[in-house]
Length: 311
Image (tube, rainbow, N blue to C red; front, side, top):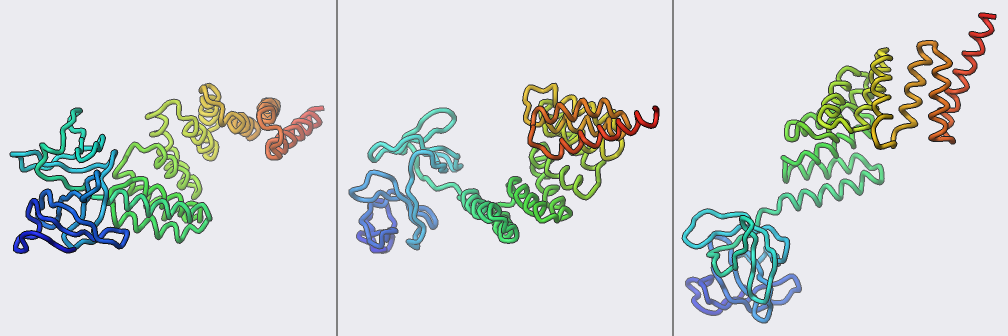
């Protein structure tokens, strides 16, 4: 970074400096103000406000939508604000539902970009996860946690990646950590319940799903999973109750599974006529399901056997 002006105080307001930009070229700029290791300057011949640190390595362009921190004149505290427009050399920020021009600000600094860097790591992890390369995905997610450890969605991503590898104990560990940050996250509670279900800890799974159902009574997936879980512990009446709730809700995304689930409950109680009725309903929704068709066949065979025995 070259300097014109007072070399004893190179970043004094009004000094002309030369800034090494990402194009590989130096550009002249006028120092607006500086504090500690930050310089606020305006590139000559450019209209947008630019940032660089005193080592010349940190570069960023301020534009609409960026989050910055502003310190107003006569105040020591920095306040978070959003840039709402850049007009020539004027920078406008939104603060407390109002707008202030940059001329009223004694210092601007960029908000820590840890969240953005963490999100980039998560995106890379997601790309590995899409390719079913879960180990590399988890490495990226863990790097994101090192950057920003309070993002619960990162814990969700790690939990789902471990679950995809059938490492449900590991999945549970990370999902629980995420719940410490966001205890009412439906996606985390559902995922945690799914991992408990996968290792046959059905009571723990039920606890998770019930929380979601209580927080959002229209959550069809929570009610469906409660139906599955109660079925697994032999509580068929409770299972049917939750399956019926799925059917009563406006969405019909899981109706075929709910019909089939009710059919299973009746089948395992040897109520084959009722089971046949609901297996047929499931097939009406999803005609190509071999699973539902097989269930219908099993129930029909059982009914025929029972009629033969009675006869």
